[in-house]
Image (cartoon, rainbow, N blue to C red; front, top):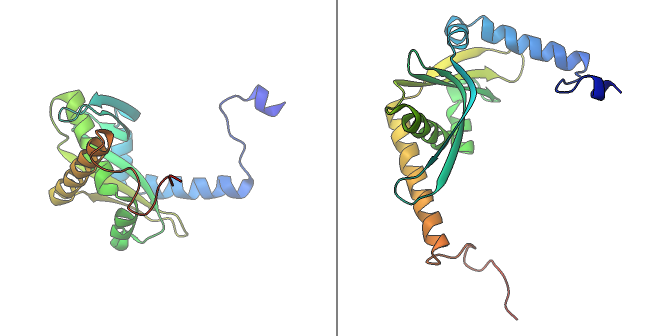
Length: 173
């Protein structure tokens, strides 16, 4: 009954709600994060385009765009303290995601964003929030990783490479 009457809403337990409010407060108390969220011109914006080199259809979803300042902000909840966020970056290949998001932005706007930042919220008490600028070198590494991955996919699609690592795959007996 409740779900039918409240389509698009979520029922939270009291402790989940309290946790969410503490995280929200941490973000609101960070002046830079609050300014970014307050000046956002696009939230959860999807961008679709076709890769010019290999013809792949690509898609990104940007957490937050501040188009007036040409800034992309990516909200990340992390188990690592801010000074060790690089561990999450390595684990989840965030540099690839950042590079693809910047390319999607460029495809849509004709120019790359002036800045890409992470809004980092620690997912354990106390819920600290910081904003980190992403250095250009990080984005270059991401672009190189994405380009290599797309080339590998293209070669697999053309049958030049196996889809399975050597020794793994379909047995033909």
